[in-house]
Length: 96
Image: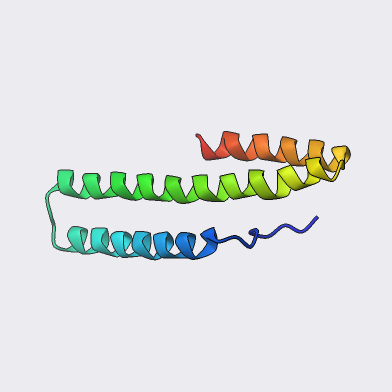
């Protein structure tokens, strides 16, 4: 089984979102260096959590619509069971 990010139109969107998140993290670093108000920093941390969760959801959706759905369509039920088990473990980790 090929275990890499599926080539989708969302790849560019994911990269853009990750670049934006990187900028937000650098912004928080500057806020800490400048000794900004704690609540303002926490609000920015919350925004980053939300943004990273959105990226995760996009990747999770691509995985389900790509890898999992394709193995089911191909009738490869042994592989499908493996992927569904892996998917459930991933969802459990992701939603902690």
